[in-house]
Image 1 (spheres, rainbow, N blue to C red):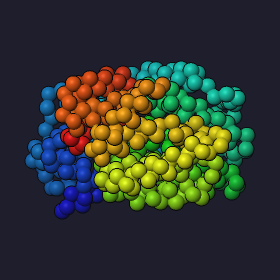
Image 2 (image 1 turned 90 degrees about the vertical axis):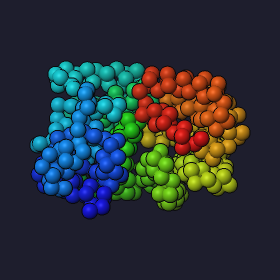
Image 3 (image 1 turned 90 degrees about the horizontal axis):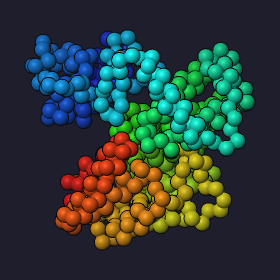
Length: 420
């Protein structure tokens, strides 16, 4: 059996036995073979034993080292907010920052998480959005058809969640209420609605699945993020919302970019750019698509194509008025300098990258953005074999990564060997 065939057989076993949908692929099986992961969770080990006809974990090379917990990185393909299936041994554990930690008292954990989220929401209110919580809660069980006023409240809550995500240093803090709201939207999707209401509800759902994907992406949970973006694209298509649809495709392609699979990212981004052409010409969606294309082309070593894409993205500065909505679309051109610098680092052109990145670092930045720029400047030092620059910017980037807990910064810090 090939690695992919083994992965599919394990996924099928877990579904048939426990009703748990998982997203294991051949890449994950390869990591187990190489010893990068040595102790999957119990149901996964059981599935491997059944598929490979082994009687013991040791026969497959699975063993636990002192102080180690499960090392599975395969995401269960439940909808965010859906309770664990029977037999799912994630119950009683929470995945935070890529590490599985014992949660202890479940009620206390949920209370603390909700308090943390509520604090973030109050710290970043959306002007003019007094939410009718009674209306939101009463529609949560899907027992009645939605009306436009309730959809207005859903959109208002989504906007507040995006604002909280942007303001939070730890993006995982937003997850509990995102999951809760997704549960509410899913319940309403199951119920018959009029066509206009259904389309609008699909748009609201696409918006929130993109946020759920962002939270997962920041935690380096790429399988979960990919599933969220796929569902977001599907919902946006149902809503005939081309900008939302293109944005979901762009975010999905970013996973390939971060995994350095540029060959698959380029065609997906081309599709996203085409979709964006059918969207609202006043929005910056197509310009963001060009920025993402530049990153993928840089990964393929295409300096000319990368520069052309960045030049197309720069046209966002000529759009009149507000070009984004502050939620699922936040691109306004302010990040173009750091994006251009990152592309030059990828192209191994430190002479072009350093002045651009140094200028970007002088801006007012979020913790995560500052961390990514510092990391790129450390990579410039790697490419120049400048030990002082590596230590200066690398240590600052490490401090930022610890402060924010961002998997995005941590992932970039793991790329020096690839870009040396």
